[in-house]
Amino acid sequence: MKGDNPNDEALQAAWNDFCDDLKQASALVFRDSTPAQDIDRAKGLRLLARNISLALQFHLENVDPDFPELLHYFDPIRKQGGDNTDALYVGAPINGENTYRISGQRGDARYFAITVVEDGATPWGGAVVGNLIDSEVSVEPDGSFEIVLSPEEQGGNWIRTTPGAWRVTVRQFFADWENEAPMQARIDCLSDVDHDPVLTPRAVMQGLRDAAAWVRVSTHYWADMLDKWKVQPNRFLSYRQLDDNAIDATPGGEPLICYWQVPADEVLVVRVTPPAADYWAVEFGNYWWETMDYRYRLCSTNCHHAVLEDTGELLLVVSHEDPGLPNWLDPSGHVEGYITLRWIGAEHYPVPECVQMPRSDLADYLPAGTKTISAAARRSQLAARRTGVIRRFGHQV
Image 1: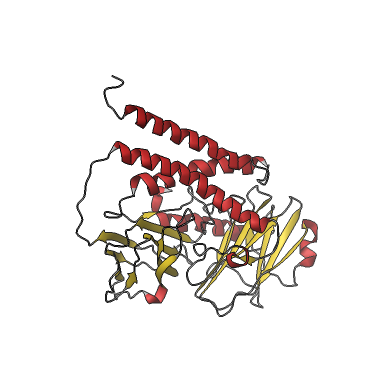
Image 2: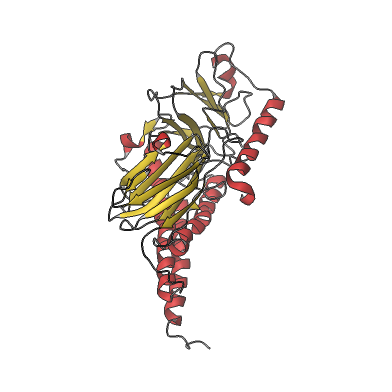
């Protein structure tokens, strides 16, 4: 009977506030700076809905830094903030005063980094406390590894934590999607802590408040960021050139981002000669800083998959129709969005050139001997993408 529990009124109010906050978050989708096409409106609302689950994971479920779990952030159906088509991100909450061990099989993703961040002003935390990247992580011959996170110095793989340390994230970037295996690992708190399994009304109310706020703040944060590139279309600029925020760079390299606006009868050609690098990649997405559906669309390439010209040049073509070129970036119904290039561990960091033109001029513009792709090869190229995604994430997506 209503009223039997003294917390009923507060719990119901917390749920109603949660729903009201999510309703208000939709204002982002309809603000003046947002593209007004049907597909952008629809995907904006879907972005909010998709990120409710991530917000609840961060603020209601996997919230105990004494007993954390490594859970993945993004996948083909949950995205934000330039989720990187090649990536698998996993992470856990931590307390900077505790000692933790991450252990398991490293896998063989081309790029591998463990980063500890402090809490801070952005939805993803503040400054980076420390990290270990690729060869800095000592791995046993059988592929096993251990990393300790603690305030006191440890032997072997170790990242020093600070009192404000708040989250650990493992980045894995896959070059050969079909053949590189993901990490299999766990995190354990080694400090002397007691587990309390009892869920309290207070914890639920706080979790709902924080989750709703995170959906609103995080989606605004990335849309506001991308608006800084939107006013300078067809120019590749780094975060540092537009925003001084320590949380937004990838350890070991920094993305270059370009905003594109391509009508149905035009194409955008991006040209660059990739440097020698540990890993490089091209990511392609919409205004909401979501990658296109990389299971079924050609919306990325990288140091393994790209087809370079005989000169070593990379030719990328944004075209609403298949141009018959191997490095096609398929807008997937959008007329604007972003392109990201990541050079990691590179000898230098070249800035690509963008040339926009009518679609009818493309053939005359391309250099003689530009490589093409057959219809059969295109089908194989697309089929391999879904196979690679299943290898990375399993059949859960």
